[in-house]
Image 1 (spheres, rainbow, N blue to C red):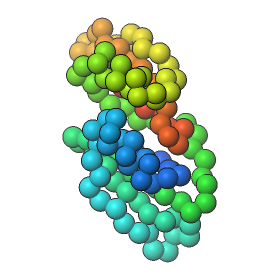
Image 2: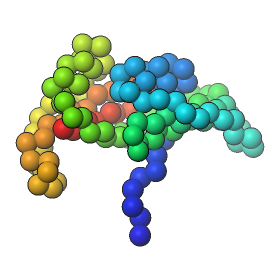
Image 3: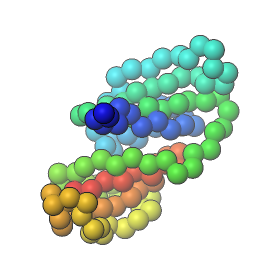
Image 4: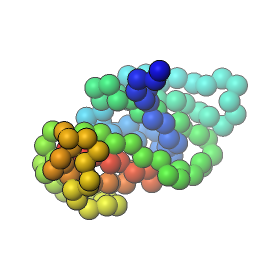
Length: 126
């Protein structure tokens, strides 16, 4: 019945800082931004895209805490991408390791988790 996740959403404290972070470090591109009439304290909603993956940033006028949010993207050059993000000073939450594969194509894939500017976790595998 369901085929894929359409988007992953989380709250951001500084909309432009988050847009810049994901565009610079992961290759996402902002493609849409809008106001949300009738929702108190929700200033803007922003959408960024990387291939078929969409992130939605909710920018609230008051601080809203993120707990447990993460998304995962696939890397076609794990070691290079890991080093680039580490050199950029992005905090590593879980060091690179080889998890148990969920499917045969994931055999020998590595996994790492970084932390974004609003405390969100950014996992990537490859």
